[in-house]
Image (cartoon, rainbow, N blue to C red; front, side, top):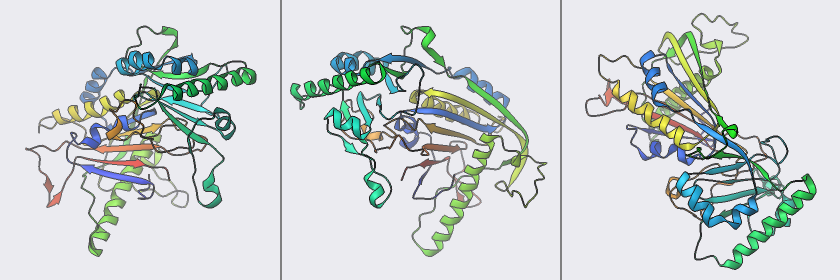
Length: 397
């Protein structure tokens, strides 16, 4: 990951109680992959495996017009009580992540449609044009995003909802003529799946891999220097170079790259890689979850890792020197990011950043963490201020 400030936002902190960390998972409502990487430690792994429950999601079919018609009961019963989220995944016999028209209902109870020009003109609902790039290309291809809070709002008249219901019903009638069905395939996140057909429940299993005899960096995290003078400009460049090296190492460990091997002897004319210095040789554990992952599981991973890591800070305890958590979002989801201030506002009208779901984009974040700083921990090492974590978030231009 290149720390280009135009594409990557970086944050640092001295505590896992910082709001940025506490809200991180819920800012990214739809996740398809989580990677946890750390120097191998048997006791640490056992603590993780004993505490983490296997996440799951549900595959099903729904009628969007029925959801809108029964919106009040739907939000009360499923969203508020069960934390339900939906993401459409095609219309045919199989699930597809590449459709012209997609929609989602996030945990706030907001329905977001991302539709092509033809569908938008047929719906007759007001939305925002999705544009990217520069010049004429910024006009886009006519794609629009429409946000509809399903939670009852006094400010909206019954006439508005009648128009919405009629528009979606006409849309589904056209879909019957075009593809033979008005139903949508959906991926569902729900806290309590006891009442769901077990055949439709898909567990997200953890895949574990161990890399042996690899170069492992000795990680010491420092806050990003504030660039207030020419001399600090150089300090900031050095900091960015150091952090970029760490994030690059995490990425290569995730791929299981042989460049990390202590006995790697690749021809320098073919490829050159130097791990962040200093390093030691050891084993690295890579745990990966791939599927449709709810924010609460991601946050529990962050919280559990910080808690277990904090417990292991006695001089006698054997613990990992650092760990990293990387997340990759469902890039076909209309909603990419929900700000912390709107996470608890049911039915909010605030529109998240617009995304063109037809574009291949990067939507990921990576957290590198060391021991959480507390009263007994040194906040400086050799006169250098330390911090507990650094977070890099890729942001779409």
